[in-house]
Image 1 (tube, rainbow, N blue to C red):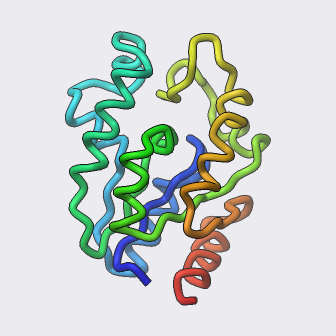
Image 2: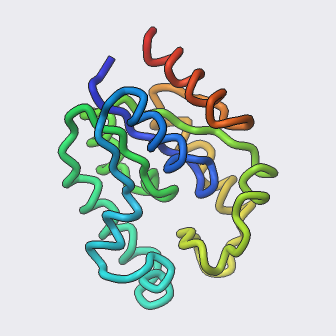
Length: 165
């Protein structure tokens, strides 16, 4: 097992919630990629997206991900991390990448206001279109896939089970 884990998946898949709990369980440090980005840009992701657009944001996101120093770390990436091949290759070299898979129905129940959530998407692109666009990318970059369609404890148990093997 690598000594660090990166969680990938759609907004609403539970990366931050599960990541914080997993870090406590393993006694690892926890990094929220979205918070690191917001600290760098000094505003919310949504404001930045509204102002500068998808391409500028994904460049900042890549830069932030490439700066992560992995050492017994749990990283909760933003949902759009998979849009950068460079960043994802870096994550795979330095951590075990786990895709937290949640159904579209679950994601849409968890995201209340798409226009305020900071979801990186094309102009006029719906949540479903964004979800479908990224599915293959999540699967391509994941070392492991863990379904997060139940409780946090159930998801944590699944992760602990796959990282021990």
